[in-house]
Image 1 (tube, rainbow, N blue to C red):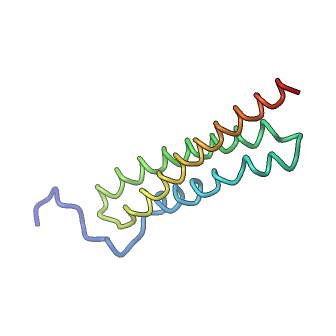
Image 2 (cartoon, rainbow, N blue to C red):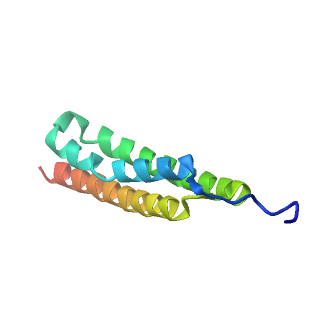
Length: 105
């Protein structure tokens, strides 16, 4: 093996990839909790957007780290990216819906 070849740690899952997946999944249901508790109708979607953005940052760091260390978990990181994108999109739709609903009534 050459010096620039990463070691074979493919049986080890990258922790940042797993964190990206968990935060991406958590970013999806937060606006629905805001529907049940009127006080948090704007706070929870904003927290969901923050979780989604942090999940995307963790995804990017995980991909770079996996390239250097040879760890596994690329598919987990990609799933985390997908969940976070869906979560951010749902959050933005919920915020727009709340703004439109409150402007009508």
